Length: 135
Image (cartoon, rainbow, N blue to C red; front, side, top):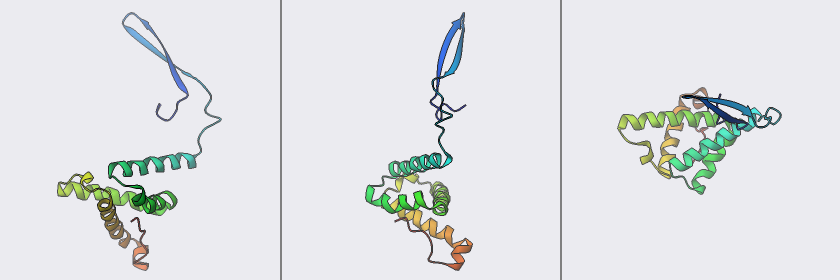
């Protein structure tokens, strides 16, 4: 059970000798309020965007286009995630920390990888200039 997801549990404890017994109990019913999958997805997207912003020092003006593409277009979000995985892989091969790329430099590197990955897709062959722009 993940306690990070559900905040409707609390715990009582008792001890007997050298043993401690922990008994969880529900504080309120969250089943009625259960988050829809769409809300969970939006929370995950927001969490991920905060990660990019903090980790790579992105300012508000740099985040505008990137966050719009990531938040609203599912295919672009998947492409960005694949590009980020590739970005980390390339950085490790070069022996460079990924956080050495900050702000605009990070976005430029990501854009280059997105273009490279996009060109390998079927849409990339049909529409070579149709790649998503995150800068």
